[in-house]
Length: 287
Image 1: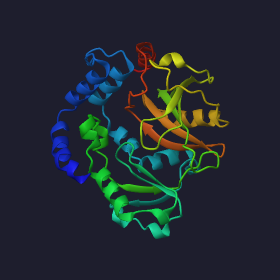
Image 2: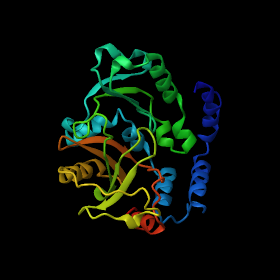
Image 3: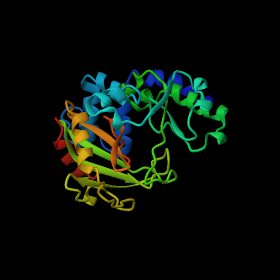
Image 4: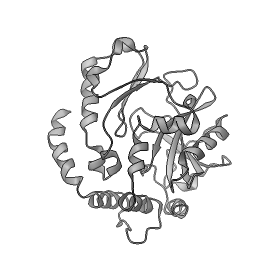
């Protein structure tokens, strides 16, 4: 694992100086067409344009899984946040003996850098520190052209383990609200997720909970979900958190009938496979 850092760190330093090239190559690899930087119309073109041409200081603050907690608490109250059990500069500082039997460990500066601990007695502490240390140093923002991640000061945070439907072995359902100028327009639901992977099933809904399978190129991974009982509360929460941004995705969970904050995403991945028509609809909602 750490042998990879020997070349990824200097590569990150090089690529960090040319985010336009990195984003353009990523875009072309996915869509087989050039990124439209002069007159963007489609969803991802506009997101990439914003990342290259606007002040993303607040993106860094709110993509930071630790700092965002203060913002969420101020706008929506602390009750909608997972309980914070600890924050550390180094993984070796984690006092596992003082923690409950189950919890979540994550880094604040990247993607898919979470570890679920369901029984701390079975934790390999050296392996845990090794993984977290790698993620803390991994130059995620520079390698992906997402410069706002590169500006986050790396930390390890420990939070309570959220449980779906009273079963800790059931993957949490993600409710991802696509918000434009403070108004949630669509909600993507991701379920049956294999932890820390992009293997999941999903469906897009409008705000009346009508499914929109036509948004996607492939229907193989689509699966409809029940409207959560706290959906209206979720919409209200997404409105408060997205106010002031021309686009942000607000990710929430439903736990014991109440909305719980997940994260805020300014540059969503494109692995779900939106059609051109869907990209045009979403792009049309962005300034």
